[in-house]
Length: 194
Image (cartoon, rainbow, N blue to C red; front, side):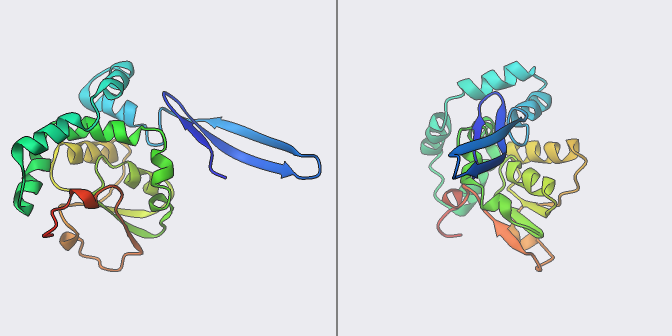
């Protein structure tokens, strides 16, 4: 059973036992940080805000609308224009932070964060999946276009003293003996020609 609650604090189920004869359940809850990889605290440190200011920024940010409006305005119709869009947009960093702290996010990426060994996080956004994989002992390689959200991910890796190689594309990953490549919520951002 994977049970959790995410808001300003995260609570995860530490253990659960069920005695069918007594119809009794015993469980303990473990209180965690603002989210599994401390997106709120990290954003506060990166943007030089208080934790409350960062949480307010994430909580009140319009989700998807500004990014969608910018997308429609720019109409990127080639792979090069799509790459340029994500490299230049100012909306995606906070939107990713909001998405990574949303209810159900960790349940959505559960299979990706279950990968073991040498793992490539393709299109890793702000690095939350990569950080969780690294915390579980995976040897992570991070692939993301140069962008504001990638700079934040790199800052997060450095803050934790992690040496996670960062690349612009899968073609740059020299060691082809990987155990897994994970891609969460990324395929829809890639131009069909690629």
